[in-house]
Amino acid sequence: MTIFASSYNLWNMENLDIAKVFYEIADLLEIKGENPFRIRSYRNAGLVIEGLPVNIKSIVERNEEELEEIPGIGESLHEKIVEILKTGKSHFHQELLRELSPSLLDLLKVSGVGPKKVKLFYDELGIKSIEELEKAATAGKLRGLPGMGEKSEEKILKGIKSFQATVGRFGLAVGLSYADQIVEYLKKTPGVIDAVPAGSLRRWKETIGDLDILVTAKKASTVMDRFVSFPDVASVVAKGDTKTTVMLKNGMQTDVRVLDKKSFGAALQYFTGSKAHNVALRDRANRMGLKISEYGVFREKDEKWIAGEKEEDVYKAVGLPYIPPELRENRGEIGAAEKGKLPKLIEVDDIKGDLHIHTKASDGGNTIEVLAEYAVKKGYEYIAITDHSKAVGIAHGLNEERLLKQIEEIDRFNKRLTSHGSPFTVLKGTEVDIKGDGTLDHSEEALKKLDVVVATVHSKFNMTEEDMTKRIINAIETGLVHVIAHPTGRLLTGREPYPVNMEKLLEAAKKHNVAMEVNAYPDRLDLNDVHCKMAKDMGVMLVISTDTHHYLQMDYMRFGVNNARRGWVEKKDVLNTRPLNELLKMINR
DNA sequence: GCCGTTTTCGGCCCGACTGTTTTCAGTCG
Image 1: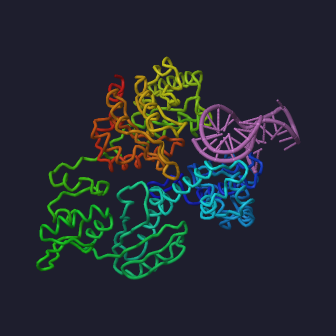
Image 2: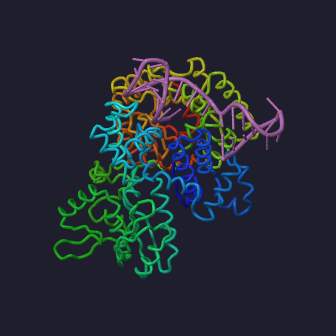
Image 3: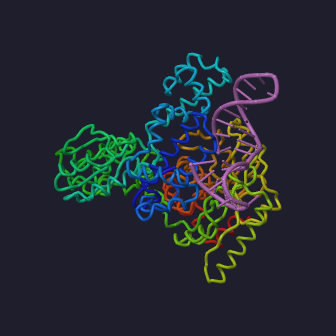
């Protein structure tokens, strides 16, 4: 899970730091084979603290006894929280790390490797790191161990490969969090005129490699001096007056560049990228007798500076309208701009409601009332309650009896809203599980009582592409489904998407008037940008939903919207930009 | 380690899948 600051400030660093320590304690205890319930307590406390809508530090400052009013926090965790806030670390955590090894925690990130295997490999072969594990697996040394065979070895090697593919890049939400904090921090430096993040972050790419922050200021050295003393800086890689590079404590490289006001737009354009987009743009400039650099647009024959103060000016100089950062991937945006055919991209404010929300009834954290209240505050007209169905046991999915009860509860709630003169509506829905054969986990009778049926795959991820495609199309063809949620099942921090033929899926969706979800959860962003464009081009309607499990996660909407923007999506392509009446008309075929 | 009482200990959501076994342990949601 993830983070950010200022306007995206759902979490705050103290809560996250503490949650991380508790998660690591849980992992380490698990490797040691401790009492599973004790382990669960730590993990649960981590989740609770991470999702806490208030800064835990402010609770402690007010009255630390209040900590034990938080569900899942008792005497022992109370003390550990206070200790971490006071000293920055937990003694118990440090002890465990000394006893085992911090790098053992990395091993758990390899898919197919859990605490028992970590312990086995450590005890039997002394394996402490992913590199050592890879070596041993390649050399065939794992297969002799109890419970391990050739296939397990292959699986682990595959897991290592996919782990390595994600290493070195960070989730967008983590990047945003740091970027926002650093920007706020730099803006407080005397003489700073402006500070903005550029790079893949500004393009809302789903993962980012490093942070680029551009600053205009009266005096560069003051900015750089302050930057290197940012609390999260681990080491300074290079420090000069125009560019300074540091490594943050979490391993994220961050560059700050100080620029003249005159070239700020050109620099912003240059450092926002993508590289492919910039190459195409400069090529175009060349053909017009111009040259674009981070310092501006110049006439080739006499090197005369003609533009660069604003980003718009750079595009204008090469005869183009402004191209939004999300489109700058050289996927046809320059051609479209030239023809005046750039899409009018969807905005966060276009969203009228959220169609994928969990309550306490399954694995969410809040009641319908709390969720509705927050949705009203966000200016929404409606939300759909979509708890899991019974097949998803771990999430305490609803059987039909409980679903019918929830339907009644929502009816009563809506009546109350109406009697208070509220125009807001809670829609009755479900996130019904698509079983292995493509049948749905609720009966037709029950599903027909609902306003919105969202259907999802949660199990058997390793089917062949053909079977998985057929499975989901079967669900679509029931005629009972309105939305397919997170259609590829990927998790950006670790799970590959399951194989599915997206084109066939979209064809079926189009044929049966089923919408595809753009899941806004920063770890999912599923459909991804390319699939969004595919859906749009094929005339398949989209829904942008947050998959909220805690009411504040409704603010994830901006991640979903920006991800869709990367797929050229416009307001008209998205169902939940419609007012309620229109929405219901469109899905009740 | 937390929680809730039927107050100070016993219970704490579990089912599917995989690869290894030959009846099950480990992993994953």
